[in-house]
Image 1 (cartoon, rainbow, N blue to C red):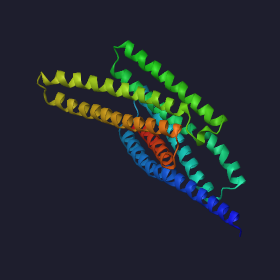
Image 2: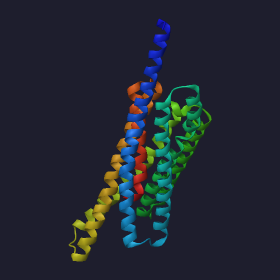
Image 3: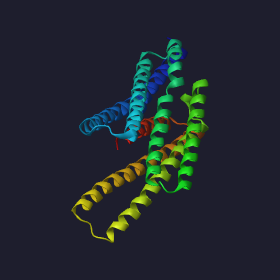
Image 4: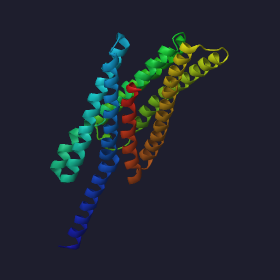
Length: 272
């Protein structure tokens, strides 16, 4: 074996190892772990729903969204596993030809999950702020921008090789989603603060105290989950921005892992 062939062999081995390592720790491992947690949360939600039943149009719409999110989550899970299996086989031309169609559609379930999850959060916020038309219109405008940005992102990924690298639309779409969730979380916090302050100035009987405790738990959960999701999105925006301007191997793995985390958080929203 000549020195040139030896160097080419080492280069191919390093490329193969880097690809497998990135797909494992940036994609497959967090995807499998978070998918398992999602299945547990979904099973609990189904059990509670089976006990109490589905009543009214809002709950039916919510379960329709949960079904869509579940299908997209399974779709994305299958794509990630397929990526690892293909990368482990070889980096041949056949591998690249097989991987290309998967790469073009790999971001579709992620974008669907994020948009549907954001729509659920915006819908809940509008139901809390029923008498403020301006805020509802503002949320509607942000959601419209969010939907358009995600559609453009998906189209660019599908018709080019942009799914393999960061582009401007990636962090633009994430920024719209961040704005929607930040506004919704802030509005829910303001409403909860005013509501709890009103109850502090007057005594509560036993029935009111029980309802107050339940409502406090629900609002606290919505606020805390919103803050966590906004934090994940903010970190994602920063990582996407730096990856776009100067991609490194560490940033690539971080970006993949954060993408899986955002997806898992998005599909968990309806089960809160």
